[in-house]
Picture 1: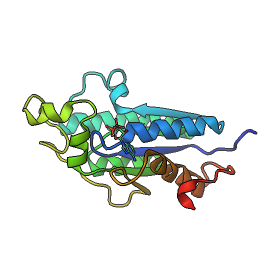
Picture 2: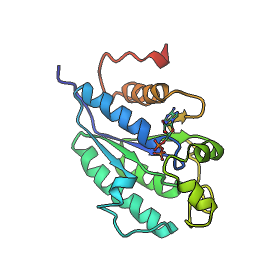
Picture 3: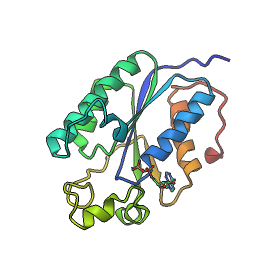
Length: 187
Ligand code: ADP
């Protein structure tokens, strides 16, 4: 069965280690399984190519987000479901991307700093606490929480599969995917 689909950007924002990559990859796999056209723009990978050379000042972080947003908007116009996974700490520029892209779902991947730090998936919190990394979001750089995210995944309280289901259910609720996708989380 070929699924009908409108383009949309699903923007995952949150602290390092909150679960953006994990959830967005799961959503990507599930959407591909359903036959959707999907692209994942992961901040860590994008910074090796499209935004190579940019640092972590406010200006560079916002430039990083605007370039990702530009690519996301092109793909979205071409009926792709775009998953963006990036800390994107500044509310203004996230809202700018929302306005520019139009079909936009913000997912706040929310986990307390203490939990992210305990997970320390990439060992970066340890480095930041030791002063070996500067401008680390949550430690010595700000994170501005979304005020009106369409989805909030509380990853310290939910399983990965529950968080993934929340995102897929929102895509279905907003008619970006029209399938017979019945999620356990909504039961
Ligand atoms: P980020 O991309 O936000 O930096 P990662 O996805 O790399 O974060 O790491 C998140 C870690 O948290 C992973 O080790 C993942 O297994 C764990 N985790 C626990 N519960 C969840 C959940 N509900 N959603 C996402 N990740 C979770």
